[in-house]
Length: 326
Image (tube, rainbow, N blue to C red; front, side, top):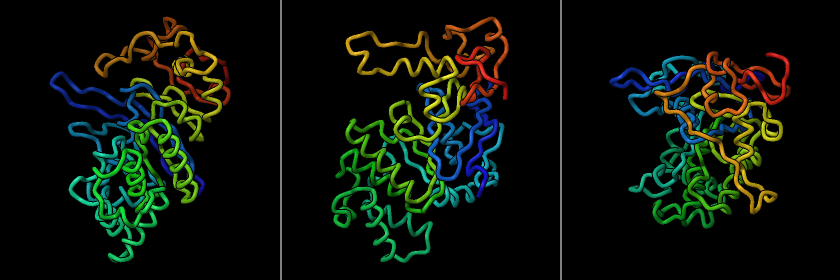
């Protein structure tokens, strides 16, 4: 396969309300190559998790995809019937959710949930599925894997539950994993272990990963490329090293400046003035212009599209480093 495994083109998601439809995602485009880890980063409310939910067909009603296309391995999936989407989800596309406690059913043992998932997606009998479940838990770094099969989610720590969720996501041998804030509820030491585990397992299996997070440190350590989202749109996308060290969009630069470093010890933390606009209050032109120090009259009137700026693509009329138009 030479093309992207996942292609998202001009994706729009809206929520009907009494006062009209709210556009939560507006023309989002990105792609993920086979074996690539793409980070999706931005403030809370930027639309990161919504994009992941749209890809796996888990938008909360009344939210719906109202425009654009989602292609997996060249086939369109955003218009699949629910039964076909269920077959694709888990087998071809795995998901790791933000809160591992709510992602696991508290009424069933870990072993039951793993075996059921395995037998749903793979041609295994009960004994084979049990052995495969033990192997998955071991690969996920869970100690005493065989003894853990009969235990329930409440008997595990947060880090151990997240390892179980990772094992579940890998059970169907998916080609793409959507990981939505997989380390948010964990302490720093366990975060590092889980990220290292996820990267190692995907390298072994060759799966691609869409890693949704607000943590630029996780992005820097884990991803090959990164897409920065703001107010339901992608404002910059490119290789992780270029986006982090040479951001072209003022919002990306502000995000990076707000990350504390050892050199800043004792100093004042940088912050982005203002707040992310609500979906019903997104301004005309560039949505970031009310908070942007480089904003001009044009920024408030015309919405920029992604264009090439040296090594990244940025949606900005006045990028930090000028480059040729795409």
